[in-house]
Structure formats: C-alpha cells, structure tokens
Image (tube, rainbow, N blue to C red; front, side, top):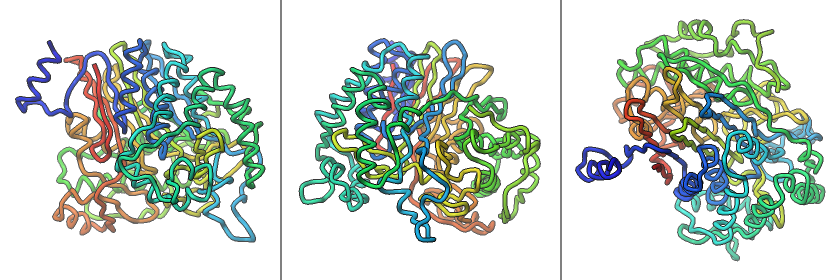
Length: 554
C-alpha cells in the first residue's frame, strides 16, 4: 500500500522520482546493473554488506574504467549491533619499490607511475571484501561473484560515459595487446556507445575465485601470472607481494557537526580527516544564511587550509606520523579565525595541529552505499585510480591493474595526475600504502545512522562529500536535491577554484571579486547518498545526476 501511495504521489507531481523512499533497504551506485546486482543480493537474503559487495564486484565488470579487483577500496560499516568496522583495502607498494624509482638519468619519468608495469600497487580489493563479508555478511563470496561472472561473459552495451573514457585512453590501451583485445576493435578504435563489451577472461577469473577462494588470487594462479608478466615487462610486483598483502581494520575517525556525529575512514585515507576538518571549520560560520557567493568563499577558504595540511601531514600511518590534532575542534577554531569574509587569503603552507609530535593516528573511485532496516549501513569506495588504471590487463585473466603508485608523491613536491602535491609523509617506500582522497562517511543523529555518502573523482571526492553533507544538514535537503546542487573545489595547489557554471554568471562574478581565480567547468565528480527519515522510517537513496547511475530499494 505504501509503495502504491508513493506511485500515486509520483504521478500527481507531489513527489519526484528521485525522492522515492523505501522501508526495507536501499542502494545507490553509478550504474543501473550494479544497483540491480545489489538488489538481487538483498532478494537472496543478503544484508547491506552483501549488497554492497555484489554491486562493487559488478561495477568491476560494467564500470571497469573506474574500479575492479585489480584495485583497492575502503569500507566503512556500521553494523546492526552498533559496531563500526573500517577496512583498509588500499593498494600497497611492491617490496622492491623505492623512493626514487621514477627518477631515470636524473629526471622524473612521470608517465611510468601512470601507465605500464611500474604503475601498479598490490591490489587489496578482494581481501577487504572477503573480510567484510566474513565479519558482517549473510551470503558467501561465490553468491555475489557468480552473477557478475555471468554478466562479464554475456557482455553488456557500454554507455556514453564508458565510450568516452575508452576513446580518451585508446592510444594507451593499444600499447598492451591483452588490453587492446578486450576494449578495442580489430582496427584499433575504441568500442562505441551501444556496442557490447564481452569479458570472458574476467568471467573465468571471477568463477575461479568463487570456486577456490581469494587464495587463488593472492597465493595461486593469478599471483603467478602477474609475476610472470611483470618479469617479462620490467615490472617489480612478485607473487610474494600478493601473498604478503593484508587488509587491516583501522579505528574510525569520529567528529561532530551541528549535533550530528560523523564516522569516516582514517589514514591512509585523507578524505575522512579533511571532511571532518573542513566541517569543523565551517561550524564557526552560519553558512546556511550566507548568500551564494559568500558561502562559496568561506567553504573555499576552509578547503584551502585543509588541503595545505594534507600536502604536508598526510600519509600511510604505518610509515608517517599523521597528527590526530588535524580533526581537533580547537585547531579548527584557530584555522577559522584566519578566514577573511571579504577577501580570499593566500595560504602559504600547512598549519601546526596540537600535539603533532606525539598524538598520531595508530598503526595497523567509485562510490556506492547500501542500508537495510536491520541497521546495517555500508559506505564503499573502490578505485583503480585514473581511467583504466595502468592500462595493463594481465594476459588470460581479464583483470585491469591499478595505477595507484601515482598517488604517492613520486617525488616530494611533484604534482600527480590530479595536480596534488605531497611531502615526505607520502613518499614511496616498500609495502607502503599511497595516500587516498576516498571519503566513505556515515552520519549519526542521536546514535542512529541517518546519512551515508561518499564520492568519486580524485581530490574532489573530499569536497563533493562535504558539500553534500552541508546541503543535507545545513539546508535540510534530501539527497537528490543536494546532489543536484552546483559544486566547487579548491585543493590549495594549484591556486584555482574549480567551479560549476551552473551557479550562474552573477554568482561567479561575485566570487571572482572576492579574489578567487576561477576555473569554470560544466560538471565534475560523482557522488551517491542515502538518507533515513527517522520518523517515517524510510530510506531516500539518490545517485548523482551527472552520471548514468541508479538508486533503488524496497
């Protein structure tokens, strides 16, 4: 009856399709087939954890330019019993990696960290999925792998976004015969929108993992094939690197914003730290009541301060001392006092958070989210970094390897593919995890989860996530409306404000007059979210209107 009422409201115009709500469970992803896979997992008796993994594995088939089992991920899980689990499936540098591995004849080869045999870290995706499902799921890994394998074997028509990514990277994909055989036509041209992408080798790999467990990947045939290819092509990853990989649990970052509690991913994610840090700064300003240009200005100034800290302090906590003081409210108050409401300030460098020498985080890009009525909430960020990762498919496996080595500071102070710079904290070292911007976040109100969100899009992940949260918490919007709002992003270096033209010319002019150097764009990023109306006990999932995603529920 409630479903019928929702349909009546939809057709009467009182409720938009994107505001549809659900009582039992909900999911939001960047691809309809991944959303369907998650819904099928719910139908099989799975919970939000199973649905997230099913959707994620399917994204590795239909959204493989962004993520897959050759990459990594972060899980933030709030289970029905109230426990919080943060799983670090971030890629690791091979044992033979070293600080100057991209310096050749005294010069930096910045392409080697992006394309080819030296670009990849050891994938952690499957280790994290297996750990999440073992601890919190109801189904087995095979239950969610096999449907994705069938889809890979049968193929699917690629959408406009996939076709555009293929066209943009076709030249690099053509450098590797095993990659070209899958993603390019016989004439070397990229597949076009509507043409079917079939991945039989990937299907066989999924089935082998379903039958033999993730050991087949980390300790068996896949690891051996990877080592053989690396030896033949100048790479350094070995089967021993795969066998040594671990996906540790880490202690969540917890912070407050206007009466809400945030639970988010700690380092090597920089996302959780800086979403919390920026919101701590914004708590000192009534941004809800600011005109658009003033709101953009204040949030941008907070972004600059946080990204300056990111460049200096952030790295793998197993190797670098990352101060907990970055999310200290007192430090945020100090930073807030630096913001001039009337003019953009020059941020010369990082700040000095309290107790930076001793109080540190402990040792130990596609986003989707799921939730169910039992109280399980899952925020899952997964990535292979840039489009099609390293562009390398290990022959006979269908698996694209990541290019996450580029997320290290290839050399301190040298920008990566996203123009981010890093310091010694994020320098390359054996078995180290590169810094990430992924920001999977769960928000509680009075101890109960009410919002889950995250994003894809390099460093804009951080700013997309925090903007979504301000629109829901400060402005009272539902996720669909919040995701439709124009976006902006500043990462300190380079000193430019990436901003969507949808704000309108008048607002852009006002922002520019405040001293900001604008870099207008039509759109960027991809963010998903689910909101729970506690009183109605209904979920409101939404996907980003900038990409052909889908949200659904029951």
